[in-house]
Image (cartoon, rainbow, N blue to C red):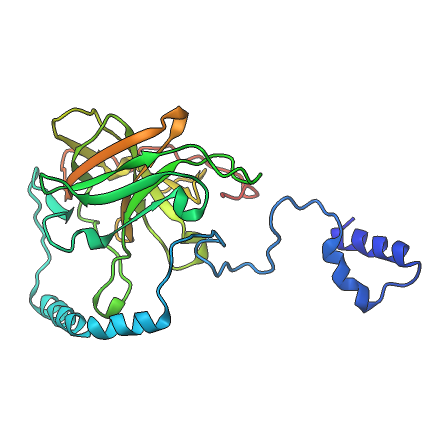
Length: 307
């Protein structure tokens, strides 16, 4: 028996008469077997799925004023893009061992390209984090992760902090993506504290089902005063959406990368300070690496829907 029919019969019995249109809105108040929020449409308009945050957003007036202040620089950037389009030639030969740096902290506005968030920004925990320049001229991501959460009966676990690059854009704030298809390896020069960090590669798509596609891989740091070079093939990254590892895994689409970032969590009671120093993030083509994708591709039945 359908839920609508059950509710209609319930209303009819309680009203002791025929069901009228005025009683139909009460159907939504009847008990049902739903355990999640009921959605009235297939399309999801909010990229955060209603997830609340305490980060203040600028007003429309502030956005207009900022746009006018940046107009001159955007025109200059647009001219450079046009010049590069007509004069630039694609690089067709990649030498083994050569690293092309994509993110570093050598420029004055390097920190402006990153966004720092913690559980406290969403009103869920008490973690703190900061991204600043270190004495060696590298990016220093440090703070304190705290697994103590707000006891509201909804939140079960918390204690995290992360940094992420802002959405890559062309001139006049047009959205675009990084194209890393000519590379197969991620190179990092880091100095950590012995914790494990999560590397995040966002591949936000056009449709709402692809808004939260993120590829992950664990970054192991050894601690101590010495720098380390981490070399991670892109074939090792695995797909997740909204924090859930997907059953149907796919190789990362290197021409659809929109954000890059790191995350740290207070898992297994690892509360306390953390410290990750990043000198640069680069890309490399390794001709000896032939692996396309590191994970088995299971064939699932048609009625099993990946979540």
